[in-house]
Amino acid sequence: PAKPIYAGQLPAGLQTISNIIAVSSCKGGVGKSTVAVNLAYTLADMGARVGIFDADVYGPSLPTMVSPENRILEMNAEKRTIIPTEYMGVKLVSFGFAGQGRAIMRGPMVSGVINQLLTTTEWGELDYLVIDMPPGTGDIQLTLCQVVSLTAAVIVTTPQKLAFIDVAKGVRMFSKLKVPCVAVVENMCHFDADGKRYYPFGRGSGSQVVQQFGIPHLFDLPIKPALSASGDSGVPEVVADPQGEVSRTFQELGVCV
Ligand code: ADP
Image (cartoon, rainbow, N blue to C red; front, top):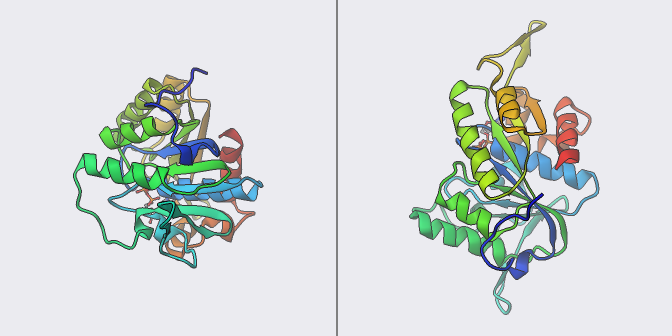
């Protein structure tokens, strides 16, 4: 594949990271953070050294989804760097661990804050950094993609028709940046009740995206109360139930990133 485009040289803080994976969606609330966190913990379970960067400055989910003991990021005053917090061996950085409330900022400021947080962190040697991207395909996302050299992108969507148009936008953004989209995760696609399977949002938009854009993998995640509960409990589902159906899906996704 062609080399990804990024502005200038890769920042020093990111040079010790082998793979940077963006988990992206074009709308909020589709399960992007859920996928980012569970993918990261699956990769860690496979033996990789992993970090999660929560780039969603407006609505950071990482502090809710993962409960590290130390919930405030520490600074190395001398080196002017940020030391990630950690939970079960995975390094975590989020604006939500910066000890401030929700930010009211304009776009360029947000880009600055995200880039600073990302590039001044002492990530150390990592096999994977999973970036939980802010939803959408605007300037903030574009700038972020240009600061780092992304290895691959995973796009999360729900099956509604409307989401298809947005997903296409995301795929186009990554393709312009020459970042391969390795998988689409179609989240909340069905649930089982009374021995029957229900598709509350319809079917088929994921396979439409995959076919139209030649994306190699499509994964389905069902609506699962356990996924939602684990998201609120601070223990990712793949950690809470490593043998479960959800964990198996994430293991397959982990192999293809
Ligand atoms: P996003 O990052 O796209 O805004 P989140 O990952 O924060 O979305 O998910 C939004 C909410 O939906 C969270 O409360 C999460 O726990 C819940 N959720 C996500 N995926 C599922 C699922 N497959 N089944 C049940 N709840 C889910």
